[in-house]
Length: 123
Image 1 (cartoon, rainbow, N blue to C red):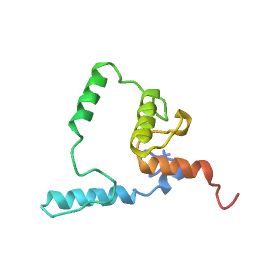
Image 2 (cartoon, helix red, strand yellow):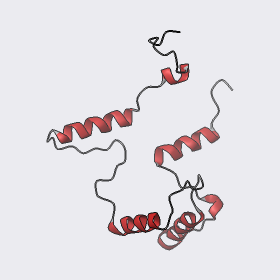
Image 3 (tube, rainbow, N blue to C red):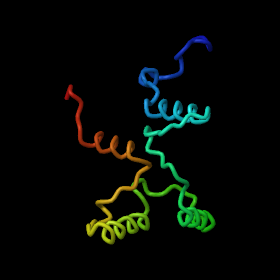
C-alpha cells in the first residue's frame, strides 16, 4: 500500500465516524462568542460559571496528596460515599455503593446505559 493511500491505516468503522454534532455546535458557539456575538451555548452542558472555590481547593489538595492515578471506572469508594451522603441529605434518598456510578458526563453515562440494555434491530 502506498503511504499516500487515504484510509489505508484506519478501520472502516473509524472511516464511518462523523464529528459529534454537539462538539461542532460548541465550536461554532465559541467562535461566534470570540467574535463578540452574544451567544447562549446550550450544546454540551458546559457550565456558564467557573468551578466554585471549595472544589478548586479540594482538587488542589487531592493533587498534593498524590491522588493522580486512575481510579475505579465507576468512581472511588470515597466519591460514591459523598454522592450517597448528598442524596440522603438533600433529597432524602437512600442508595448503596453498588447503585452509584460516577462518569465523565451525561452523554457517556447515557451511552453506557443504552449499550448495556439495548440490542440491535438485527438481533
